[in-house]
Amino acid sequence: MRASRWLCLGLGLGLSLAAEQARAFCRTTTCGPGQCQAAPECAYCLTGGLPLYWPGGCTSFSAQVSGTTLRGISAATTGQLVEQALAQWIAVDCGGAPPSLDIYRTQEVVCGQQEYNQDSPNANVWMYRDDAWPYAGSGSTLALTTVTYNVKTGEIYDSDVEINSIEVPLTVGDTQVQADLSSIIAHEAGHFLGLSHSYDKLATMYASYQFGETGLRTLEPDDVAGICAIYPPGKDTSSCDPTPRHGFSIDCGEPLEDTGCCTTAPGGSGTSGRWAVGLGLGPRFCALKSDWF
Image (cartoon, rainbow, N blue to C red; front, side, top):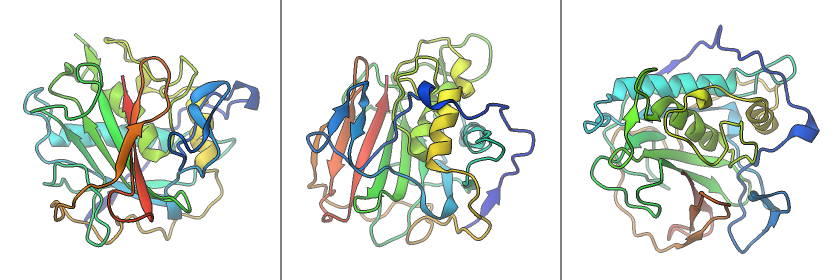
């Protein structure tokens, strides 16, 4: 796998870890709807289950080679924006040190579908949907992140992000902003790393977005508290291997029948999710889809 490890010098946000009483973030867990109860303060947080995280202290991501022709945004630009967003997340101040996580950018991939291959190579892909939006919430969903994980440990196996380019007027830059791609990517990067939605209205991980806003490009104290809770500082990540499970591939795997069950994930006004349990491959893992309106 060809990978370029980014240097995060100068990317620190100057934000300190939020006080516990200010905490509003929710971590994504192995709990599906009907398995655990929503927390009293926030339907996005489920009480019970195991919190999700990338094991080993590192992971990687790829941009899909086509970019979005419809919105005129290339794969190279997408990769740069994702790189910048994830760099912010892993360069925050967790009380004197950054989170214990490194992220590597790999070469662009041909595969343009969300998938996890149980016994063949994988990639963590950021892609667009120019032809159709195949999920619920048509017309109002900005993007969808699918996290595949081990139900017994909470270890993340794979994470793919689909951006609704056919219905959403995505823009890049600081003028004539409509649906700010940098803000969308910063939010989905939080899901990619293991965070659910926050009930802090100032947080990047808040569940709604107003067209024209660019403030979500940068993280707030609640976002910082969330990422520091998942990846507390102090762990040696120097020997971590960011290669996806079973190796890296630019191509899609063989199609597999999806016989898992799906339902609506917990959420409040303006948010929902889709759970796919088992994916027809037994109880070893399941996938949580976190979408954003």
